[in-house]
Amino acid sequence: MRWLFRALAALVLFLVPADAYAQRMRVQDPEAMAATRDSIVDVYVSRLNLTDEQQTGIREVLDAQAEKAGAMMENARGGGREAMMEMRPKFEELRKETDSQVESFLTDEQIPEYRKIREEMDAQRRERRRQRTDGP
Image 1 (cartoon, rainbow, N blue to C red):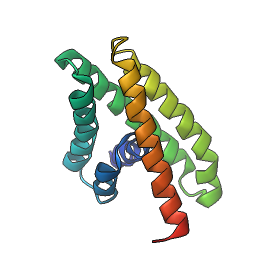
Image 2 (image 1 turned 90 degrees about the horizontal axis):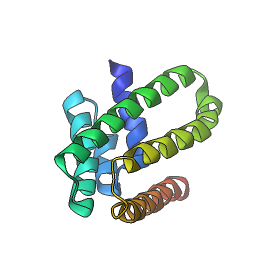
Image 3 (image 1 turned 120 degrees about the vertical axis):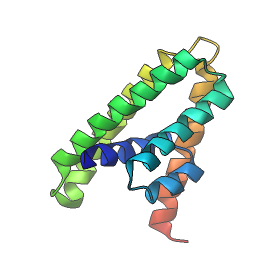
C-alpha cells in the first residue's frame, strides 16, 4: 500500500499547483494524499465548472495513474539517480496519458482552459526545479 502513496506523490509532481505541491512534499499518510488529489480536482472544479460526473471520472483517472506511477517507482527503486533519470521520460509519457484521459471527461469548451491550467502547472514545476538546482 505504501507504493500507492509514493505513486500518487510522483503523479502529483506533474499535476499539482505550487502551493499544494509544497504541502504534498510533507504528505505521508493516505488521508493527506487523498486531500492533495482533491486539491487538484478543486482547481479543476473552480476553473472548469466540472459536473459531479466529471469530478468522479477525473478522480478515478488520477487514482489509476497514481498506481501506475507507484509501480514505476518501485521498479526504479534501488537503482539510484541513474534509474530515476531514466524514469523521467516514462513519467512524462504517463503525464500525457493522464492529460488525455482527463480531457476525455471535458467538453470542447473546457479543454482550452484545462490546457491553460496545465501550462501554468508546468511553468510552476519548471520554476520549482530551477529553484532546487539554483538554490534560494
